[in-house]
Image (tube, rainbow, N blue to C red; front, side, top):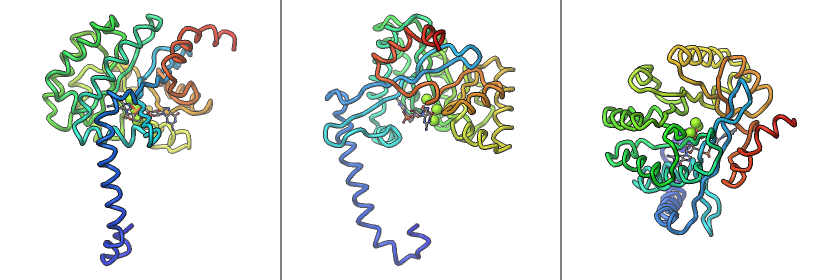
Length: 281
Ligand code: C2E
Ligand code: MG
Ligand code: MG
Ligand code: MG
């Protein structure tokens, strides 16, 4: 916007830039202490089998409530944590907590944990996974790691090797936000993903009738099927969207229509009652 108004206007924006830098500094300092101060917790969003309607697992989503600043969105603090190189320790806490909490759920219910590129660059990541599994007693098949295509962009080979070692443990991998990055089909042949998660932006566009979005979902579903991978439609908010992604052949669904991210106790209760609740409905 400043650009449109011409060069002379830049100065007027400086105070705001300063506030942004100041806000970042404050948030970064707060972020350094967030875990030890018990300000973080995980919310769990249901992942559902599109065919049967059964609950297959939950995605762990990090939440941060600062005592003074209130709830801060992951869209804001995750990139900040990545830039400040704090995502390593935070991600390790997420992994340990998610495994420990998931170990309390019915044994057919999986947990998906998001992992940042930085974490996969760390040679110690594999032992973090081993340790989180050992401490929680969660079996490796119940853990799924969600990575985005950006993992392969920087130092791709290091990350690929880490992913291979994680796969050797029996942990599953899914490719998150598919279609939003610099998608290359090469990633799909290089690494054994169990599932491709189709980004909410495609689901939304398709539900508005955007033909390109529909064509892309169809193509991804066909590709995933031939590679024996699941396809998860993200951000399904309505019955109509559910119907559409089911018609397009997505095998799993996730979104507000099936459930918002829930506190751990509620997720556990839901997991225990899902089948009964559906039978009664
Ligand atoms: P993501 O992994 O793609 O997670 C899905 C996001 O979509 C979540 O946002 C979820 O709350 C939201 N969502 C789910 N269903 C719907 C829906 O029907 N409608 C709408 N409008 N949104 C829906 P959230 O929790 O704000 O997280 C945003 C992103 O932050 C995540 O995107 C993920 O990239 C990142 N993130 C969250 N937790 C972690 C974490 O523990 N570690 C790392 N590295 N990243 C995380
Ligand atoms: Mg995710
Ligand atoms: Mg996603
Ligand atoms: Mg996303």
